[in-house]
Length: 240
Image (cartoon, rainbow, N blue to C red; front, top):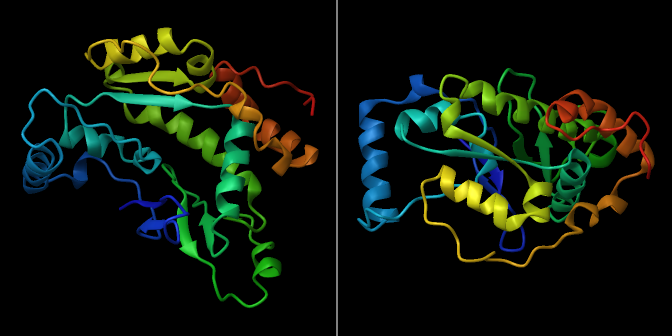
């Protein structure tokens, strides 16, 4: 049960369910496993036994044990990014889908829920009272997302740490060849002959203007303990 956003330029941007519930190995039956294997083998891979499937949906981040139960030899690539840049990117995306809102549930393995906010009378004022909804009063719930999801990913796979590789987005931008080689080695794939896409080195600062200095300070304060644990060394004082 996944709730997410597609390319908002194509449609409303809303895909799947309105809610995104935690799932684990207890939700996998033998029938589900056989069905998923059959679908990926025939419909996705076209029976090409040498091909690999990549799914980059972030809404699987609270369902990793479910995925592993379906595909026991799966490899999980955990890409992390500076939290201020991540929040600014979410703000930019949500501005393109003004009829949608995000809800951040208070649960052990949460993920963002997406729902229609179109038609709510006096929407801006009423949503501004809701600290768990964005857009509204809940911008810091996007920072909570960064903290809790990045912490929960390794926790879900703590009994098989060899199946998880963490990569910092900033390292990928700075040293793409070396980091991509680490990824292909981890996935037991042939090394890439070169970097397949153009690297945009300044991407982290593109949407910073969408945030106020006060918001940046609050995001950094929320994310500092986890950020420091992940090697970001978020400062006590933020330089805007």
